[in-house]
Image (tube, rainbow, N blue to C red; front, side, top):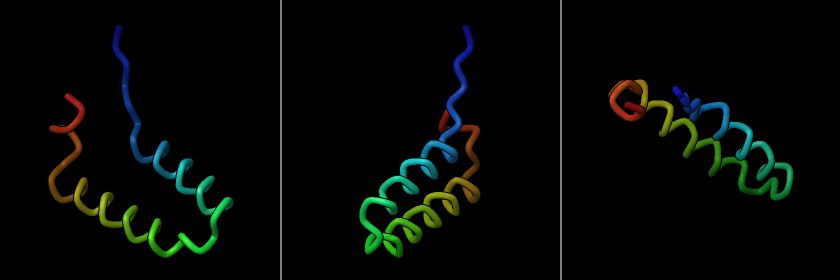
Amino acid sequence: MNITLHLIPIVSLIAGIVILIMPRLLSTIVAVYLIVVGLVGLFGSGNFLR
């Protein structure tokens, strides 16, 4: 059985729900999201999920 984790859609969904609940956190959530996506892009996602 092979289970694949798609991290970016899950993070996006959670961030969207949190932004709806607390809109003042928008800039912080966007900044953290962009940093994480940038790091994954730089270092490659293949090493994290295998």
